[in-house]
Image (cartoon, rainbow, N blue to C red; front, side, top):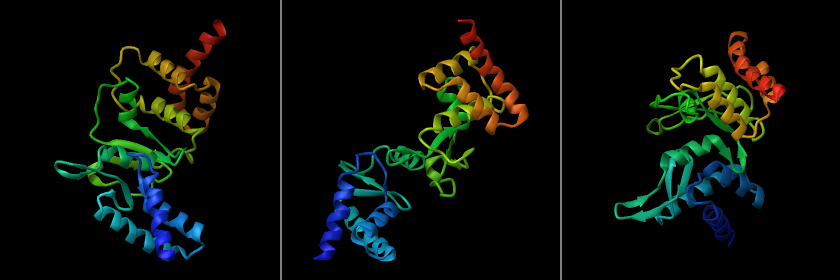
Length: 222
């Protein structure tokens, strides 16, 4: 009877996961152990067995080691749309919490500062010790500091200001694009200065703060 209850719990948890969101075997096992007060090792073994059954039934598909997602049946068989997006999400979010942010050339491209389309996506994440599948095109990096929902946009912007020194910037108005990005994300300019002072080297700080202070002077003159 208990086994059926465990199966129902895992199946319900999987079924309630939004389509396109990652399903972590480790998280399921942790929750199973906590809810039913069973040994974690046993919970992990059972979770893997039950996930295997759900794969066989076509409800989910394995995306990477320990990562699954709800699947759909197509004319080509069982498929997981947005596989790379799902993998990236495992390093950017944990439930409703932000644990990572995109950085490097791909971040500068998203900001419109560079037309360079990099072959790899660099993600700074609390899960930087994990391994992203080679086919995903994702490179994991250690973040400047432990990432939270609150500090993630500031850390990403500080790294973008730093990376402007290291990648080709071909936008004709990079400072204006930075201003637009900061305003659109609702960031506080003075707070951004504090982050820059905390995490950038002196030579990096000089260029970054020059852009930030240019915006602060506009406020003072207004």
